Each structure stands twice: as C-alpha cells, then as structure tokens.
Image 1: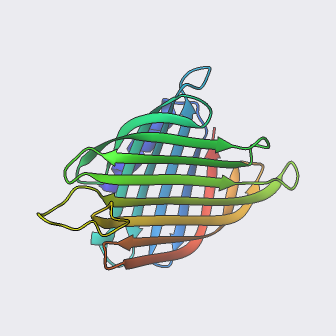
Image 2: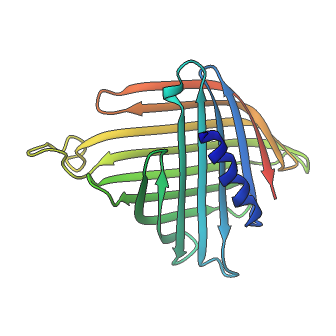
Image 3: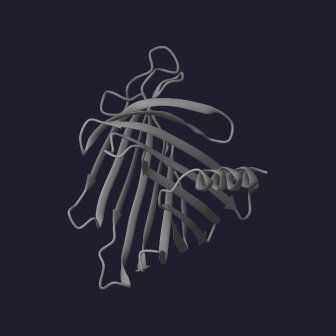
Amino acid sequence: MKLKIFIVIFIMTIQHTSAQIPFEVMAGNKQTLYYAYIQKDLDSIGRWNIFSQSLYAIHYKDKTQNTISIEGQLTYQFNNWLGVSGGGGFDGTEFIPTLGLSFGYLNKKEDFSISAFPMVQLVKPIALDFFTLINYSPQFNKKWGIFSQLIAGTNLGIQNKYPNQQREILNIFTQHNISNQLFRIGLNYKQKFQFGVGADFSQFGMNKETFENFGVFLRYQIE
C-alpha cells in the first residue's frame, strides 16, 4: 500500500512540473531503495523554488523495517546561495512541519553542486534536522562522464524529553535521533542515465545502532 502511495505521488509530481527529475532504484544486499527528488525554480529570476524528495525502501526479510519518507521545502532565495525555507516531511505515520534556511552552490562548469537545508522541526520535542545533497558529475565527452553523489541527513534533539536531561552533544543537543548517508558513484551517459555502485548507511540513537546496505543502482533523468 505504501509503495502505491509513493508511485501515485511521484506520477502526480511529474505531471505538474517541467523540472528535471532524477529517479533511482538501488538493489542492495538487504533492501531495495526507490528514490526521487525535484529541484525547480518557480519564477524567472529564481527567487522562489521548491525542493522535494521521496524515498521508499523495501526490506527483504523484515517488512517492519520498510521505510517511507516524503519531504518538501518551499524556498525564498535572498541571493544565489542563501535563502529561507519552510515545509515539512511525512514518515509514514505523521506530518512534521519544518522551518529553516537554504544554502546552495553551483560551480561555473555546472558539474558540482551543493544543496543544504538546516531546519527546525516544529513539533515537540523540538529537533534540528539537517539535510544536504552533493553532486559531482564531470564529463569526459558529449556522451560519457562520471557520476557521484552524497545525500546525508541527521536529526538532533533540541528540547528535553524529560526533566534535567543533559545536553550530551556539543552542550547544545539533548540526543542524536537518526542519521543517514547515501553514497553513489558510477558512470553518466548523455546526462540522462547514471549507473554504478552504491552504499546506504544509517545510525540510530545514542547507542549508535547501525544499518548498512550495499548494491548497484540505476538512475534515470526525467525531463
């Protein structure tokens, strides 16, 4: 059912935007991961733009470890690299509103980019959520190039969950909730198809429980 919801939302998004949309599938040793995101300017001068991402993971042995995540941010850019953003995310059970900043960088060759969103979750207990996406895709020629990508996020508690709780991280944050890192490296064909190897990592709580998934990915750039 959750996979159907993910597919419906993704198709609806494609139908209502002309932005470039990368859609990726990675088959790993523990789970299959479906991932897509959108970055689109809403006006001619690039003051207003949106960023949205959707992720769905199917665990092979334990369905309770299946995960879904849909997030979106509407950003007003003060300049080429700094903006303010608001939006929220859905984790399969509840919607969590967020408010924060947007940082971006694109080099002159347009083959290296960084997008980062430090956000405060506006639900109790309040937490800081930081997301970043880094792409580096240099071209060998008109057809072939390198594709590499890092998607990383972390969630740190700000507000105490119980009285007299100590701030255990940098004397600012009460606890580490979860962190994720998605690594991809491979080849880029006509800036349309990307394929290669990938690795996904997750860390949970203060006891640093971890999850790893290694596999191969196929990525298609939809226009």
